[in-house]
Image 1 (cartoon, rainbow, N blue to C red):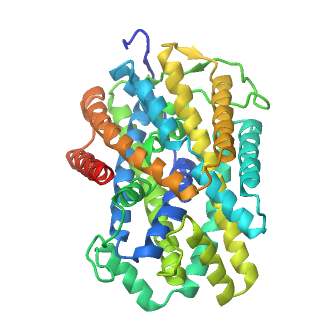
Image 2: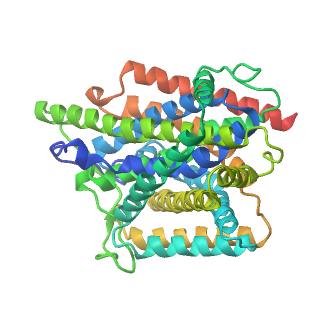
Image 3: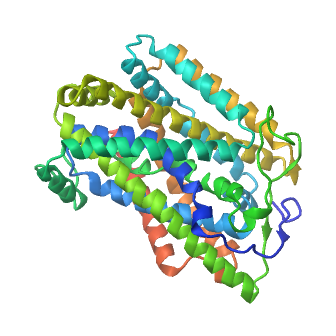
Length: 465
């Protein structure tokens, strides 16, 4: 696409905001990971293989931190999503992001997992009915919130602030000092009778868990939406998506393209201050809190159900956790654990549906090469198409959430391999020299690119052999 079809304006970079006013987008991207890697895949692996694999979790979330910051860099500098930048590289890239997003996240495994746990907590046999109710409720919440970003940010903030401390208290109530030592050994790859990888582990599941050590897949790229909507940097000039039902100006045209700033001394000073604060916000919320939450949930699975018969069957290990917690404390606490984890999964499904609908909406509209578009109606149409697709998947008999989550994770790992290369190109070719990634960040991204490339090959070999 040419600059004529995707224009880029120019204004001065707004004054940097203090850290307390920047808190928000990282809660959303953290919430995106809570339902996949944190609650399901890593605890599942720990319940079957022990804690010697958590080194890969730390690597996975560190890689995603660096990926996310390059996505944030672009949104900070241009006040538009990274997908607009990709479309500036090649006009047909939006087709790839629409397809890869739907294939990676269209399967309703996370919501079905949440419905399964909630059904277990309330002794409801019809899991599919609970799943349908969950998806319709998600659609209602997203459709009725006046400003979409505020709805999602508020939900994730309160969920994490309430849910995570409850899980932490449970975990460290049960954990012995020896378990903490075992967790530390796992961070350097020392497992129970193995180094780094145990015999019998499925490479596809392990690879998928690394991809989901955080948000995973194209959801990492959605961070640019939330950075823009929060008003980071040049995002202060961007439009916001509002509800077609309750939002003011829902029919107002929405500009997909952004603004950049002249490289004056003052703008560069502001840029570096923005960049430092944004890194700190993401390091604190996404990396530190995210890693701590993943380690805690994985440790809880280990100290309650490690080696228990039946753990390998879907998400049965979470039910086993709740039973053990109830036996060691009170039955109501085991039920509360199922409810909390079930709600966390359902909230993650909400955030996934929001992010994927944003991704597909923006890429669909980019194919039209329009400067300003009525984005709210398109967003909500795609949202409800995804909701009804998920319900259809339930109704035709796909009811194994772990299988659906693992399938999505493998697809998303392949997707991440492709867009890390694109991020390297966009950061070092499309941005001005003073705003480009440093040498060490480029090296880290290149290493991530090679890491995912190697595991893509290994997964293909495993599946074809």
